[in-house]
Image (cartoon, rainbow, N blue to C red; front, side, top):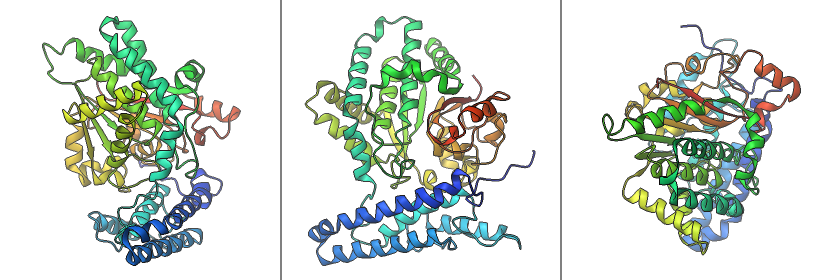
Length: 442
């Protein structure tokens, strides 16, 4: 196999990795520190003096982390006892073993961007773990919930659309069903713009109706394998009586809030259209990348929908709770999703998760961090085939559904990336462009 290109790093001045570690990451940490400060009275009211001291401790640990990042200090081993602490510390040792006389240190600006960015979020978690009894406080919870609440009009539009579509779904011919499949997947794609880590934790809610802008956004889909996804699922549906008892689709989730709603609307449609019989939703086990979905986020959102006086919201909440209770939808999390490894290492470091994904008929990887981990966050040429960049990660047919917010993209046509760069030099970091990028046998 050819030698792999290097991973992106903040060593490259002028790169988005450098911009992130110099500006966005400190801004996110400052917001986390501010959030703790805003909740200090709550910690005291809930836990007394021990809660107030815990808040001060977490504040102090994160303030030091903020300073270490800004001054490019060496990365330190984790000192908590969380289940993955040893894995992280061995990963740090591994990076030390790679150092040669030309490498200065394992640090925020010298080491791979994917590693140090993941490490920052794990260190935020460590600061809370070391600050009992506030260890389960989610410093990102309020911004995730705000994103959902500020996107209410767009969510109502989508929920009404889903309810009307579901009620008449038996009457749709194959072509009409295909059009709805394409439409809802595009909504799920553009829902991925609502990324709070990209905006430094500032508001990124969805205001406009997503249905109204789909035609305008089509030219910005750079790789469009929707036809392939449709063929895979409709062919299984047509032969399900003779050959298949189940069709399983897995969503590797990204953001909570509005994007999660778009993903669940897609999952609901897959069930009611019988394009899938079983949906698996994979979230994070700890707060991650500001807006990533965990179990508490999913449960909170369903409760919010069920408590709504708006009929379509209530019905979606009730239906989605029912799907989870009867296991038509299965929520899963696994510690591997919050480790710094690229996904080609999954079969070695998390063989149980890899074996679980092998049971899927189609895996939908949402968002930018998933894409970076799929292709190793490496400096690939635009035209390198997606299959090659996956570097042996092929558990089942898979598709990346991603708006582009980092300087890595493969599988483009010759000249396509350069042509966009000429007209839109910042195209890889704005979320303006998207892909449906498929890999696997049909």
